[in-house]
Figure 1 (cartoon, rainbow, N blue to C red):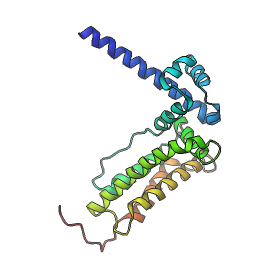
Figure 2 (cartoon, one colour):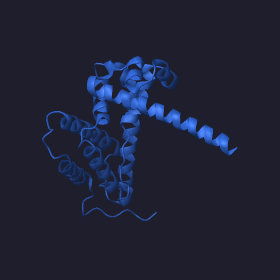
Figure 3 (tube, rainbow, N blue to C red):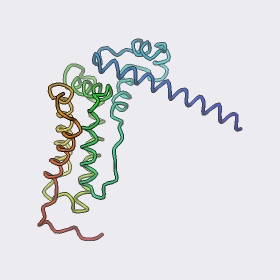
Figure 4 (cartoon, rainbow, N blue to C red):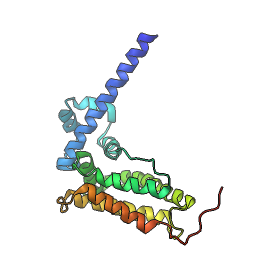
Length: 211
C-alpha cells in the first residue's frame, strides 16, 4: 500500500510539474507576444513537451488561456490586519508592489486583459467570470470593514470594488509602460494610504453595535 501511494504521489507530482511548466511557458509567450502567439504546439515547444502533452492536459487553446488567466493572478497577500479596511489596503499594496520586478505573470495578465476588450474578444467571457470573483473578493473586504466600523457607511461595496479594480489594473498598466521610473514599493504604499483615506469611517461615525 505504501509503495502504491508513493507511485500515485509521484504521478501526481509529475502531472503538476508538467502543468506548471506549460503554464509558465504560455505566460512567457503571452508576456512577450500576446495571446496570438499561443498555440498548443508553440507552448509545448517552449515548455519542452510535444503538442500532444499540452493537448492532454488542457484540451484546447481556449481552455489553456482560461487556466492561464487563473495562473497569472496568483500571488501572496498578507491577511493579518485586524480590520476589513486594513486587509483591503494590504491587498492593494501587495497587488501593486508585485509589479516591482515587472514579472512575466503580471505582464501576461495585463496583456490578456487589454486584449479581451478588443483584439481577442474570445477572452471577454473568461475575464467576466474572473472579474465577478474579483469584485466579490474586494466587496467582501469592504463589507467586513463596514461591519467592524473601519469603513465609512457612505461606501457602496459593489461600486467601490469596481472602482478599485479599475484603479489597480490601470495603475499596473502604467507601471509596465510609461511610469517605469517610479519607485514601486514607495508608490504602492502611497496608493494604499490613499485608498484608506477615501474609504475610512469618519471620526464622527458611531461604532457598530456588538453582535
